Image 1: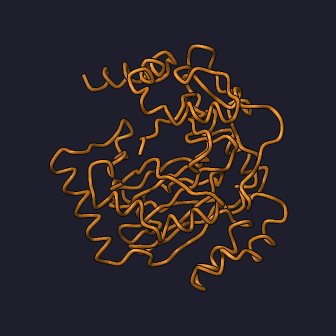
Image 2 (image 1 turned 180 degrees about the horizontal axis):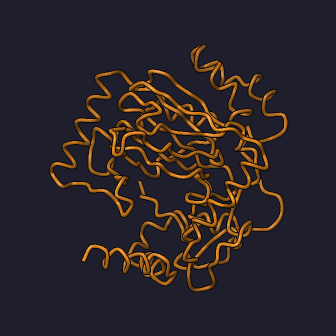
Image 3 (image 1 turned 30 degrees about the vertical axis):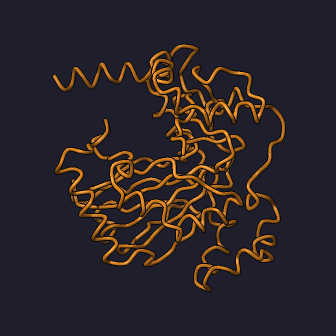
Amino acid sequence: MRKILDRYYGKLRKLKASYVLLNFFNRRKLEHARRMYSKYGVKRNVLLPISSAHMPKGPAESPWLDVPDAQRRLMESEGLKRFEASVQQALLRWPVDGYVVLRGLFTPDEVAAMNSEVDRLIRDNVVDFNFTGRKIMFAFHHSDLLRKAVHDRRILDVMDFLLGRKVRVFQSINFLTGSEQHAHSDSIHMTTYPLGYMIAAWIALEPITSENGCLIYHPGSHRLPYLLNDSYDHGGNRFEIGDDAYARYEGAIDQAIRTGGFPAQEFHAQPGDVLIWHANLLHGGKKMTTPDASRKSMVIHCFAEDVLCYHELTQRPAMMEER
C-alpha cells in the first residue's frame, strides 16, 4: 500500500496543476511574492507556475561580493571590522571559495538542547520525515528553542553582511542521518531574482566524519553560471515537470564539475561548527560507510528580504510566512 501511495504522490508532484491548487489554498503566504512581482515587473498571477523563463530579461543586480572586484570591496569594508579576527579571516575567503566555516559557534549545551528538542518533536509526533525519508522540514515552526536557534544573530549577522542585505529565515531541515544527496546548487530548489540572494548554513549537531556521511562541497563552483531550467533538457512541458527532471539536472551538474575542474572537499566537523555557503555553491552528502549511521545536523536556508523568491525546479513561488 505504501508503494502505491508513494507512486500516486509522485505523479501528483509532477503535475503543475497540483501546485496551482496548493497555491490557491495557501494564497495568504504569497503576499510577499505579489509584492516582489510588482517590484520587478513580473506580469504573472502568483497562483501560476513561475520560473527563470518569466523573469525580466537583461542585466540584473548582483550581490556585492559576486562582482569582479569583490575581494577589494571586502577588504575595504567597514562592516568587516565589526567581526572578531577569526571570523574576519574566514570571511575573506568568501569571494574565492563560496563558503565560510565558523568553528564552535554553538556551545555543547546549546547543541545538546537542540538534539533533545528534535528528539521530543519526533517522539510526540509533532514532526515527521518528508517523502525522502531523511529530512524533517520546518521543525522550527513547532519549537521556540529551534526558532531561536535558526534566528541566532551569530549566523544571521554574517549572512546579512555577505549578501549586503537583511535576510529572513525561509526553512530549516533537520537530519538524523546523512543526506547522501548528489552534488547540486540550492538555487535549483530555492531561487531568487536577482540571482544570488539565497544563503544557507549547516550546523553540526554531533561529530561529522567521512564514515557517517559528511557534507561535500566544491570550492569555487559558486562562480559557475547558474544551472536553471533553460540550461538543460529537463523533459518537462507546459503542464508537467519532467519525470526525471532532477536526474537530468544532476547529470548536467556532474558535467559542469568535470568541465570546470572543481575537486570535492569534505566538511569534517565537531558539534556546534557551522558552514555557511553561497546560493550557487555545488555541494552534497557523502555516502555513509555504515548504512543509517547517526549524523545529526540542521540546515537553515535564508532569502534576502526584498527579492523575488521561487522554486525553479517545481516552478512555483515561495510561500513566505508574513510577520
